[in-house]
Image 1 (cartoon, rainbow, N blue to C red):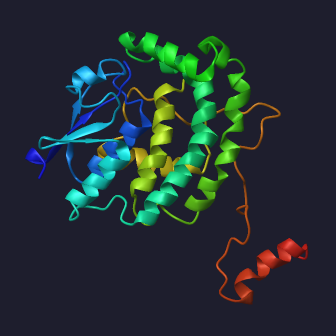
Image 2: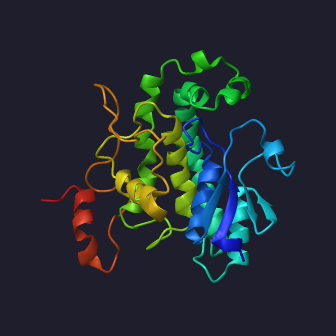
Image 3: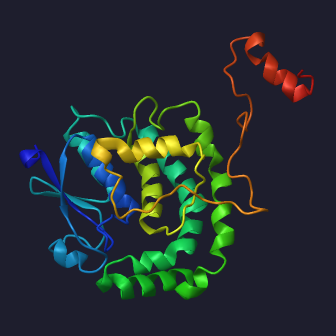
Amino acid sequence: MAKDNKIILYDLALASGATISPFVWATKYAVAHKGFEIEIVPGGFTGIPERTGGKTERLPAIVDDGKWVLDSWLIAEYLDETYPDRPTLIGDPSVKVLTQAMESWLWATAISPWMTCFIGQYRDRSLPQDHAYVTESRERMFGRKIEDIIIGREDRVPLVPPKLQLMRNTLAQNKWFGGDSPNYADFRLLAVFLFTASVADTPVLTDDDPLRDWIDRGFDLYGGLGRHPGLSPLFGLQLREGDPEPFVRGPLAGGLNTRNTGPQSTAAETARLKGTAA
């Protein structure tokens, strides 16, 4: 059992103290979901092997009563295996598979373009001793100077919200991605938006985006775990003439929107699809 109900977590943070790593964010939520208090070991990108006594060069890492566990997915699985009497994170192997698929889609859809928009803030908000590492590693990753990567970002930011409709459609019929209550799927996906809030200097979603309800409820979980003062507002994107609609208004896209319990339940949608609706 975790000593004094606390688990040590090695953070990857910016100068503001806000966590930047989506993997660390997901781990914070996992530990809190299990009902443990989190004892943070602060720090940034540089000096991780020194901080962890050579245990790892990547974060997150937790220490549970002397036992080291690395990697966000392995940590979640460890917590479920070690503390099965506490709220479940993954529950079934299918949850892991589907969550990884959804997370991969969201990274390609949102994190990748948002990174090109806010990589300057990613560097500038990091700890002073991390500036050189962030600059060199990210410029090597993109093959361009940071100042060149961000060119045209005002045109790219409005292109992301319409691509998130899959999430809106799912949440229109479910309170959480975990169903009636949050699970590790929610934490992995919320972590993308928490990462973005750590580096974005302009909003990325409109005030009326239907995702706001889920994001706000997610940030409020566990005593406001996602409400760090170092995070920037996600909502308030101002669209310009010619920008795409940020989300589908009206009936959901993608097939029938009501459960089929007989002809009466689908009559209105059938009429609409046939063009015979009144």
